[in-house]
Image 1 (tube, rainbow, N blue to C red):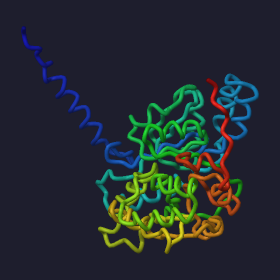
Image 2 (image 1 turned 120 degrees about the vertical axis):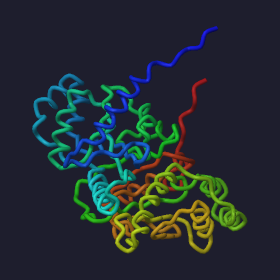
Image 3 (image 1 turned 30 degrees about the vertical axis):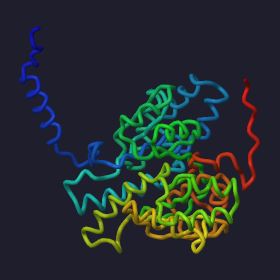
Length: 355
């Protein structure tokens, strides 16, 4: 049997030359980093922009009138949405990183991930350019779910208004959350990206939360004391905190710790003395730092979040999300773990499964 001969290397040389030419092109516009080097944040069009009115046309009048409306108004910029301040803060971090590391591609890369049709793309592009956002990668799937593309884009975090898509992404092993729109400007920092995380079922698995829900606080405290030196399993957002820490360390390496444009917060309902040590030891075992840790012992999170003013706060329980929103915090729900079966500590009645 004869060997299959490789194709003439001339084609490979031509491709390499073309790629080198493209890579060496000079432009004043910052170019997106290579996906394998970047921290990739995928945002849906309805999280980046406020498209409530447009969504209403789609639901009430159908796809064709929705697309026609978008085309007719494509020169009118869309209003900022829930993820807009977060994306602006990511871009500020990139600016600082480029100042310190001009040739580095370890940057945030924002991808617009939407099931909009391509005809709507012109309005999205015009809106992005109007606000001076650096978003060069688009994925417009024409009505199909974009979830299948997330891994191909090497996504580190996916933000959407569609809870079903977010759940699908988490099931695929991708950090994801459902964002909620705030009507008022929260007065967020222009110079520092501030990200707040809940602990259990967000950074960590829901293993300890299961004990609370099923056996009560006393059993939970005993369990946490017994397993204080055993790290918790990772939760859906652990890898995103890890990515933030990687970029933070680039600033620390330049003696910029006190002027770092990324700050992270742990805001947990756990008690410090009774169950806090395991959390901190878990982070230590992962080699991760958290800038501020707030143990609230069951107290409401909203007032503390109002002081922190995060660009995004991740929590797995909707009553904490609602409490955060009441105090003007941009919140993102992580639909993961046993907490999805409860609301304010009470089990939600589940519909009977049909045989």
